[in-house]
Image (cartoon, rainbow, N blue to C red):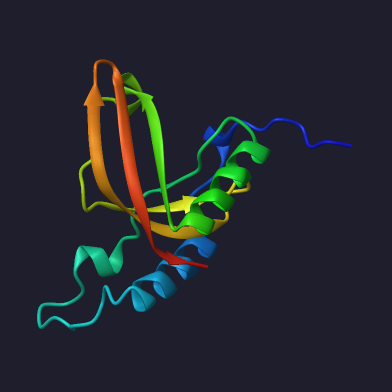
Length: 128
């Protein structure tokens, strides 16, 4: 019996498992290497945005498997999906599987806008 399609936009990306993943990813990616004298930085306190790719659990899980195997990935989406906030190189985000489980910390390495399409390339910085 196959799993029913799930609307990934309804997955809750703000949960304890995400915070635990972020603490580990920050440490392993050496993002908190130098303590500050003025308290924690935003990068240390607030996890980057989390997201899942695809329209179903299967599509999202297959995408995550490919990204983890290659340690890099890419997406293409209509510019309208970004609501005016275009991606920037160097930005971190947390890639989740179809169930909302954090699987990798990724960094945008290239952004290309062609007509109405936005293509992003990213590399895996840390994977669970």
